[in-house]
Amino acid sequence: MKRTLALFLTMCLALTLFAGCGSAQTNSNETPDDRSVTVTDMSGDSVTIEGEVKSIINLWPAGTSSFFVMGAGDLVKGLAVNSTGTMSAWTQYFYPESVNIPALGGTTPSVEELINLEPDLVIIHPSTAKDGFAEQIRKAGIPAININFSDYESMIEAYTILGKVLGGDYEKKLATWCEEVETKLAKSRELTKDIPEDEKPVVYYIAGQGESLVTTMAQNSIMQDWVESNGGIYAAKALNLDSTEVTAEQIFQLDPDVIIVGGAYQHVLVDQLKNTDGWKDLKAVKNNRVYTNPYACFNWDRFGLESNLQIEYALMAIQPEIAAENGIDREYMVNRIIEFYKQYNGKELTAEEAGYMLDGLKPDGTAEIPVQ
Image 1 (tube, rainbow, N blue to C red):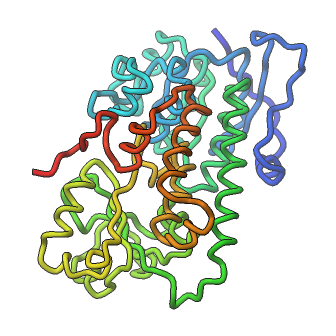
Image 2 (image 1 turned 45 degrees about the vertical axis):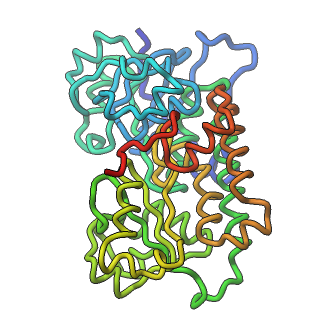
């Protein structure tokens, strides 16, 4: 079994990020079994992984989709939780065996259970990072790292670390992803930088994880990232909201220009917006500027590799004229979806399937939660 060796602290990861998403330094004559790489994880721990990573236990559910999107589903040999409910229809489309990955019953399985599965790497849940759980796993001879993200900046950091750990084609894919995201964000900010503050649309985001029109995401989130980068004002920031709950009265008073609805309940909630007193009178609803947000292995609007696609989608929703002037329209997004999954996953969608995804639908064109 591969052993984790505690070595001296490596060069600060920030230098890597400053230079872009680069590769780990390796000897071109090394074989996979000879490979040795040391990373500094997001707890600041120095961790060495010996040999090729062929088996991963992932205890952080929010990061699971990344493996399926980049064609690394076969590496995942255990998850904190797993069910057909947690594996979306798109995940099962890209990786049918995803529902059969063993569930370990939570974020802190016994170390003995992990030893029995003989993983090359364990990714811990961020909530256990301060509890010494990673160190317990390392003392058993299994490399364990903490990577987590909540916005584009932290995703770039996390994917840089993961790329170094996995190496090979996965490292190249993740480095490309980092570069693409940095380029897209910079382009969106450049395109929208001259919009006066009082002309920017107010964007209200609805999480869509249940049948609630007043559940959003707090300020200082990835949602605020893609709204502000695309010339919008994030409603939760305008309300100085540090929780996920808002009142209908707050939204009615704010009267947003754009409403973007994510999650499995997006179509149900759009129907509610159009047919519920108060909500149906909002500017966004009356002007037909309510959008369902695409999802696949995970919600584009949240975080993960697919949030790469969210940047241009959000520009199309928030600043449609600027998007159209720069060739970003429905046809462009359908083609971009096809290219993205072919590039990262190896699966080539049809134009029809890509259109379903863009509309927040499953691969068969039906809604995850149908409108009654």
